[in-house]
Image (cartoon, rainbow, N blue to C red; front, top):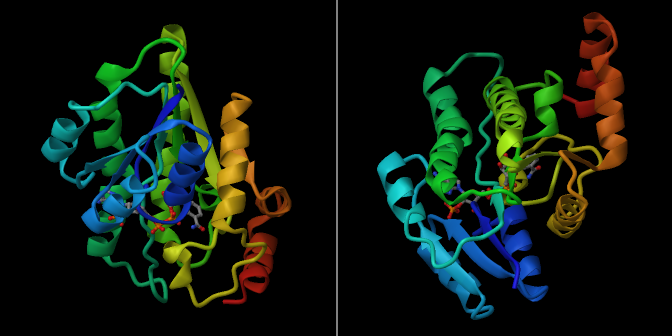
Length: 241
Ligand SMILES: NC(=O)c1ccc[n+]([C@@H]2O[C@H](COP(=O)([O-])OP(=O)(O)OC[C@H]3O[C@@H](n4cnc5c(N)ncnc54)[C@H](OP(=O)(O)O)[C@@H]3O)[C@@H](O)[C@H]2O)c1
């Protein structure tokens, strides 16, 4: 039976992935902080095992990940959070909170899983398309996801000799509790079901980089090659800020 560990499995994209993999007969190790939501997930099927820990707490993360009920071959490091900077006014505490979960939390997870990794395993790291272009109010989130993409792409290089594959996932907007709080226009937003489908399909095909939705990715890339003055004008119009 195939098996997967998913961080951030209590909500949004991670929850949908956990439900879908369980439905498809995989053994799932679902990770999160919220015990009630973890219990709901484990009641879905006997193939869902739950681990509760806070990824920003290194010792807690290493301890939890040292006691896995089984060794998965697919590891989806998805947990993350988003906070926006208002009116371009820097808030270093906000910046630290976002980096603490998105970057340091990811590093804690990688440190925790690395003793279990061996040839043939795949580690999938959830970044964001926001890392590819400067978007309004995304000073903290976009910068953290740029760090995530760099980290993931570098691990791919360094782990290739050990035959451990790394996939970087670059979602556009996905309707989840994380984006429910956004008050701005979110062009071409997809459902968590669509996100799960696209991620699972890309991982099954062994893709190094998984981008979705396709048209939104294409627009972001086109904007990215324009002169900065054009980019800024078009981005403001596109996101209606
Ligand atoms: N939604 C989008 O439009 C979008 C777009 C691009 C990229 N992404 C990325 O996709 C990933 C999932 O996002 P989502 O939209 O599904 O968000 P979400 O619904 O808010 O879910 C976030 C998940 O991360 C977990 N998490 C947060 N802080 C944690 C911590 N300190 N320790 C352990 N777990 C923690 C949460 O667990 P608990 O609730 O149990 O604490 C939850 O399961 C994130 O990395 C996000 O940046 C999302």
